[in-house]
Length: 285
Image (cartoon, rainbow, N blue to C red; front, side, top):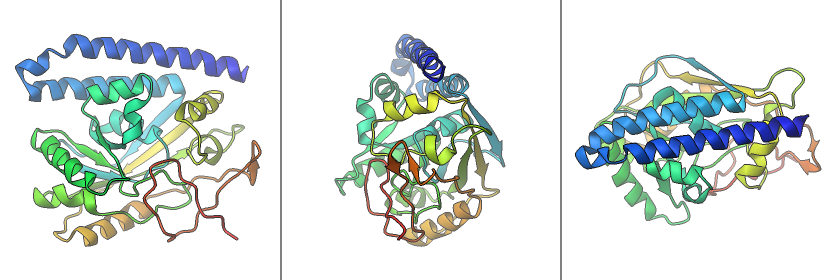
């Protein structure tokens, strides 16, 4: 029964994505008329796809607080690739994603066609290129979403924020919005630490198939009441981290052993490193 649910949902998600690709290709000539108009089309398509994807995957989204209005700069904690789905549906913003997402089947093409920005965190100088794209995105009227933890975490805390990608907001003299994101699975299903957070070192489609076997989850995004402003990049990162942490509800961790794999316990305040893949947290001994 679980596999039948997952397969039927997966087929539906592929159909939804293929239809979106067709719509995107059909409307692409609008970019020749006006890049700004094309960005408006992109926002609508992205929100449509995110809404349909969430419905098909069983993800219920609860939004609390005032959503920022474009153009804006928004930061949020990072738990799974579903975070981008929530961001897209609630704000229609462009987000900064790790570079390998561009190569994902179907999803990679959709992301590239919708102006998603990709960053190679293994190359420090890539920050310069990405900051230029972030600045251009906001100047053209779009909102931008960034995950300043710089990687997916286990969801037991919010790791310290890295500051380099905050520079465009400072250059544009723009205050930074923030949001806290948490998930909960329904009674009788595995905890969100087991099937929502992406802590195993595995491809996204393996994780997605596992998640689709169960009823789904509720994603709660809490937007801050007012954006935060500071001309000092590191001070701004610290203020934003405290604000996001204050609104964060930790995930219930996976049981000690799940599917033969030990859940990696996360140490608050530990070195965040700069990895780009699913988080492998330090075990709490």
